[in-house]
Amino acid sequence: MKMGKVEMVLAMMVLFNMSSCSAWFGNKHKSGRNSILPGQATSSSCPRLLNPAGSSVVIPLHGNVYPVGFYNVTLNIGQPPRPYFLDVDTGSDLTWLQCDAPCTHCSETPHPLYRPSNDFVPCKDPLCASLQASDDYNCEHPDQCDYEINYADQYSTFGVLLNDVYLLNFTNRVQLKVRMALGCGYDQVFSPSSYHPLDGILGLGRGKTSLVSQLNNQGLVRNVIGHCLSSQGGGYIFFGNTYDSARVTWTPMSSVDPKHYSAGPAELVFGGRKTGVGSLTAVFDTGSSYSYFNSRAYQALLSWLKKDLTGKPLKAAPDDQTLPLCWHGRRPFKSIREVRRYFKPVALTFNNGGRVKAQFEIAPEAYLIISNLGNVCLGILNGSEIGLEELNLIGDISMQEKVMVFENEKNLIGWGPADCSRVPKARDVSI
Image (cartoon, rainbow, N blue to C red; front, side):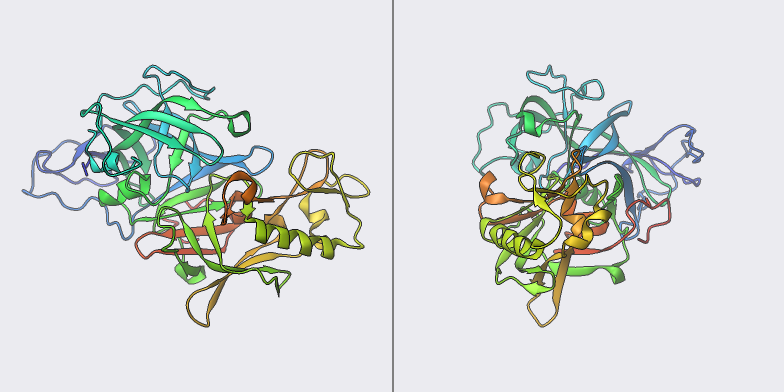
């Protein structure tokens, strides 16, 4: 795997030999950080710029589950760095931008299309190989890496893999320009239901091209990602050690599905009572606004909900097409707080191979929305109807107000309660 160069701005005066280090120096930075001036060599080797064990990146989120329908971050990419809005997706690996290569098919973007660098990733590079459907793929153009990515919502992108600079602020007040791979997406296919005006996708999956994997390979952070989605909108994502492990409940990642952040087997619980539905595999995916259960779990959930809502002042609202199942009250609802007393929590209980079980609780606020019509709608859908088969997908709605941690180095998934409206600042790295 090719290792990119790193440009840095530090808050102290240190001298490095530019011929033997992967760093060079910038000018005075307007944020108040002090930059390093070019200096003479002090040693023949380059000291470690950051300690990965204590180094992390925190990026604020924007958006919400409803009515926006997604969470996104702003990343500065290119030379000079320019801002782009990226949809956060832990269910896929590659970070890519809609690209003026020129663009064959691009959707509306908040910013001008990305102008690609000429630093192409070769076809036989390991990063390119990780994006191909099979190991024996053909290289029609040996000097460049062509790829195609298809998403579950019928969105697809064709593009070329290249290297460019990402401007990242670390929590120890270090700012780096890190050269990493990204996709130049010049041909997008999307359905109206999957469309929203973004510049591209931030891929945070488990593969080699994932942003956190590339940062880890450059020795900048541990291979850990996490996020905290606020129910009020916004929140943050993080790479590296930005969580308090003592406040996190852990379960092992599933070996059955090594490509995704999945766990299992799990049992479905409703209102603290076992439903009799078990052996469930759950995938945690920020690329989906809502959660999806397989047909067996979904039908069981509907049965328990119907039974539990008997005698309560809620009636089916079939005219509301916001989601497949909505209810109306005597008057329009304004917030979940008005209806949460009518609903019980749902949970997935993971068997960790012993007596200790990890419970992922989904409170009513984490599976319900209030539609624009003032009805309450179920934010857990039937995944079997969209081709997810036996998978159960935990989307944004069910991960709100939790710090979610994906420990790739230890193959663990963790979660814990958190105030996701509070974005950690520099050196404030404990959630």
